[in-house]
Length: 143
Image 1 (cartoon, rainbow, N blue to C red):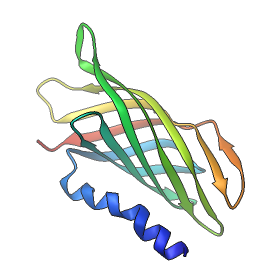
Image 2 (cartoon, one colour; image 1 turned 30 degrees about the horizontal axis):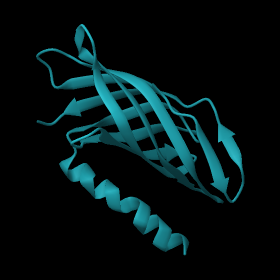
Image 3 (cartoon, rainbow, N blue to C red; image 1 turned 90 degrees about the vertical axis):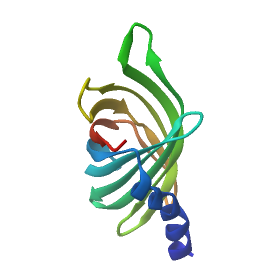
């Protein structure tokens, strides 16, 4: 059952191959501190995904239903989303995560820098609230 769930959760990450932005995320993520970070834009919002390394391997898939420019600051965007989080280590964790953040795309450069806060609640195997999910993302824009 765990293998089937792992495969179902990994399916969206095949989009990393066609992601519009890819890079790294540094910060607190379910006890880990580094991740491969990717963004795939949608007609409305975007998918923000991470493959997390450190204390086990984790996956976060968040749908940012709000991704909008800040008025008067065209290179700055703010975003808000919700999704799932999972961690495979000695025990298994599955839960929900939210995200709120701000992103800056450098003018004339294919680089994006963003800062976000991603609290999560784990509900499977045990109940844990991860409140300290601050992260710094460095991504390369592939268009």
